[in-house]
Image (cartoon, rainbow, N blue to C red; front, top):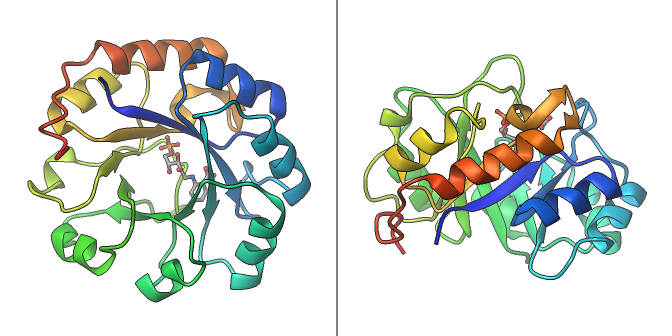
Length: 214
Ligand SMILES: O=C(O)c1ccccc1NCC(=O)[C@H](O)[C@H](O)COP(=O)(O)O
């Protein structure tokens, strides 16, 4: 067994299907207008409906008005919500759906306390902090800031690529990895070869499920 792989920021059906065939366990759809990877509800529905069984569709939101999340949920068959902004635990659980909480890691942040606040989340997605954008920046963070004993499954994110993901998995032993920029040929355009290399690099890593708290 190796860490689960989520690829974020899909924008068309054919690419999403290709990535699923290449080994993605989950795809992420961005519902955040300022992002180049933003998708409409109709397009998201087409992509989610085209996913084969056992490949999850994750909907990503950043401090969204609840009406946006509710509108998406009415139309798009999402398996999981991903909250990537400063959403409170109460907000995250208010939709009655399984969710993961993203946190932008920087020195001084108490991740154990953060994880305790979101105890009902299905996982904690640790991403790089950037003043420029809330995510999808291609920047990595200092993995030594991750504490031992996180009470939630850890999804490692931020600046991962085919080049560094083996080292990342071996050092951090996360439940899952999440990538966007590192498998793109240009901003917002996923590259099948890079995805293939990324999946192979994750699978080549020494991974002990017991270390991932499983
Ligand atoms: O992808 C975006 O454009 C985005 C915009 C705003 C918030 C989050 C966003 N993406 C979140 C993701 O899940 C990315 O995969 C994650 O931040 C890692 O991105 P990258 O460093 O580019 O691999």
